[in-house]
Structure formats: structure tokens, C-alpha cells
Length: 219
Picture 1 (tube, rainbow, N blue to C red):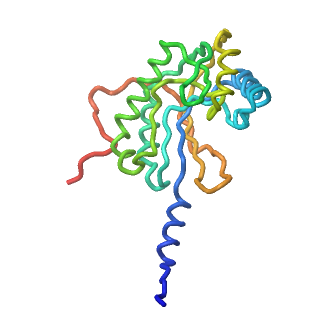
Picture 2 (tube, rainbow, N blue to C red; picture 1 turned 180 degrees about the horizontal axis):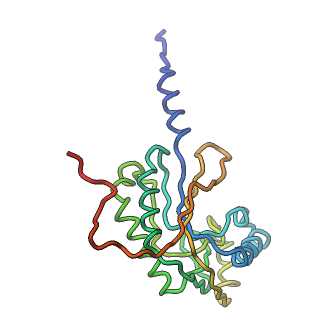
Picture 3 (cartoon, one colour; picture 1 turned 135 degrees about the horizontal axis):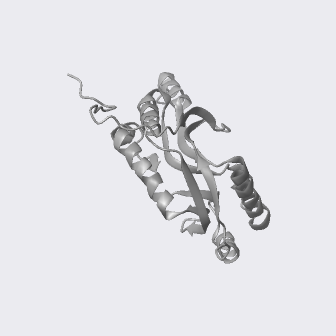
């Protein structure tokens, strides 16, 4: 009979890598009043439609998402800090309910503000895209449609009921955005999001005489 050799070092290495892998989210948070209103919507979806995860997710507007080793996140943090320094605080107007085809109901963002948000995302992508593609291939996503999720992974039946009831409804509110927040959670089962860093939006002018890169060429 042939014997089977198990390389324990190999499995220990994989376990160690997984222990240091985190899911990161860069988000805008709502003010307390707006968050309370949206949480009431999410609780309704859970109670009326059976969307069991709806009320467990805080209402964020996600700008960027990736799964990456904690040792590789520093360039992303540097980019967030730089972009926040040169981004002005804004009023984010939420303007009604919509849905994505893959089972997500959400609250949309007014078009002018949506363009502002996408400009910020484009700056983040320009500064970090190469790094993220290298260290988080296939596990990263930059915001393309600014929105706040109410419920996701809905069944076709749940979606049809929700669309019929909510699509005709009017909803309009404005929340102040003064910072962006980087969150993370471990890939280990049961882990919750924790705040890594908050970046205040300062609106400082860019210095036209200084150009730099997060990834300078090294000799």
C-alpha cells in the first residue's frame, strides 16, 4: 500500500494567509436621522418579504470593495487620505427606490451628486487600480452606480412583491457627507466589520506645482 504524505507546513501556510486576509469597504455613512429612516425600510423588508439579511446590514454607500491581505492595504489608505484632503464635504440627496436585476432593492442618489461621487471613485481607481489588480485580482469592485442597499439576494417572488409596492413610492431626503470611512472584516467565520480609519473631507486645493504618485518608479 502506498503511503500518503501530508505537508502540514502547506496547510499551516494557507491558514496563516487566510488569517491575514480581510474584506475592506470604503463607504459614505448617513447621518443618524437618515440611517434610522432607512433601517426602518430594511426592517420592513425583513418582516414583510422575508429578506432575513436586510436589517442586519447598516445603510452605507459603498465606494470601493476588495479582499486583500492586511499587509497590502497601506497604498489604498494613502490614496483615501489624499483624495479626502482634496474633496469638499457634500450634501447627498437620495431620491427614490430602484432595483438591480440580480435581486437587490436600493435607494438611488440624485444625478448631480452621483456624478460627484463617481469622480471621487475615478480618482481612487486611478491611484490604486494597479495595486488592487495585482493583490486582489477578481475580488475588487469600484462603485459604478451610487446607491444605498435596502435588501439583496432577494428571490424573484420577493422582488416582484417589493417592486410592486415600492417602485411607485416617493422618497427624498438629504444627508451631509463630511468623511469617508474604511471598514474591514476578517474572512474568518462570524467576523464583523470594524473601522480601520476615517478620512475627513477637507476640500483643500491641489498644489499645481507638485505632482506625485503612490507608486513611484524605483531605480
